[in-house]
Amino acid sequence: MALHPKIIDLTLDRMWRILGALGDPQTAVPPVIHIAGTNGKGSTLAFIRAGIEAAGKSAHAYTSPHLARFHERIRLAGTLIDEAQLSEILDECLVANGPDPITYFEITTAAAFLAFSRNAADYTVLEVGLGGRLDATNVIDSPELSIITPVDLDHQQYLGETISEIAREKAGIIKRGRPVIVAPQQDHALEVIEARAQQLGAPIYAHGQHWHVTTEAGRLIFQDETGLLDLPLPALAGPHQIQNAGTAIAALRVLGFDETACEGAMRDVTWPARMQRLKHGPLVEAAPDAELWLDGGHNPHAALAIAATLKDLPQRETHLICGMLNTKDVTGFMAPLAAFATALHAVSIEGQAATLSAEETMAAAAKTGIPAQSAPNVIQALRAICDSTPHARVLICGSLYLAGEILKENG
Image: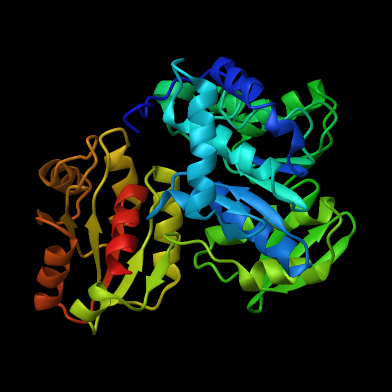
């Protein structure tokens, strides 16, 4: 981190340089499934990986950011990279880069490609870090499959001010002649994505046209041009996971996987900090009668998904513990939650220079009509909630960085 500051600088020149110095490992990785989008990338990746593994195959996976440990970003054939191998490949990348400028994400992405090229697997599943067209992962000439999850406003300072502009950046991962799965999209985003796919002769499999997903009688129903699947509901909570699951099933079907893989994707998927129920650890011990949830969503679209999940849960007084970064649309995030939140305790995110102060977060909550107060940290906020409402539902939310701190501290 000290050598390579975490400064976003969207260009591929530095990636091509370091990958060339490393012997172009990106050309030697197993077949790639490349995922871009604003929301649902990580969950969709997790569903796909679970499906691949349910079919008896293996997959490397690259995700970001990590929550508790950097090693979470790199899975080799399903297993988190170990300390020795991570240290070795990072050292190689440092030597290969020499004194030249490079960002933290770029050099660690190069390290992931190096690790993937040296370990056997059937597939490589890559999650875009930011955008798509100029993201450090976008160095794969011919992926097995590209996926665009729902596009919404986020990172406008880098990607553009409109849905169309942002969709254009996301669609930058589509490659000539290679199939692309498209999740539910706003009309302007879909127009841009379809135009890019047509320009490149990329077969497109779009939600609402080529595949459909819904729920019926406590089951997930998926239908595409090859038939209908009647599957268990996904193990990940929230109605928004239905569309993520559908996107993953569409991808598995295009890749040639059968119903067994799709069932495994629904049953075996895990993805921390996405409406995750906390059931053990110090926080649970401090609030034994409360119902604790954790979510790392941080933009308005994610808040709509959280709100839909809360709406589907049994009625219970709900309190938020919220910490956010100053780069996010704070009131846009809180507005959909106002109808479900009894009150909010605002906290700062320890160790994050871009954290909003607890007081600023509290003020933003008040603007959306949520009664709010600040707290020094999450544990003190939780104790204050439980002193007055011991049986409350408590949702810790607002940032993946906050979620990571919770997962580290709560074991």
